[in-house]
Image (cartoon, rainbow, N blue to C red; front, side, top):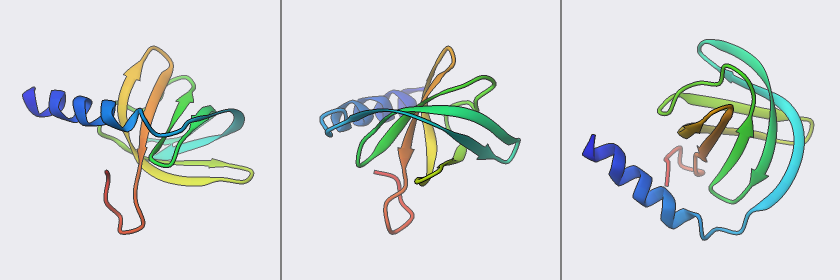
Length: 94
């Protein structure tokens, strides 16, 4: 459990990234299938999405909207919201 808390602390430091509030409708796809989501905010390192039956933290996820495709990992969950950390160009997570 302490490893998970370390990731949360590291994620907190990324909160200083400039975030853009958006309201984009799209889909989130993982190994369990695809679901409809709303992308609520974006930054250089992640996104916040909202939807039903979203994957749990640790799952990899592909988010697509009309103009956007992001591959990342679910970092946190709260009710119907998820925070997603986006992969960098080398396929690594910050």
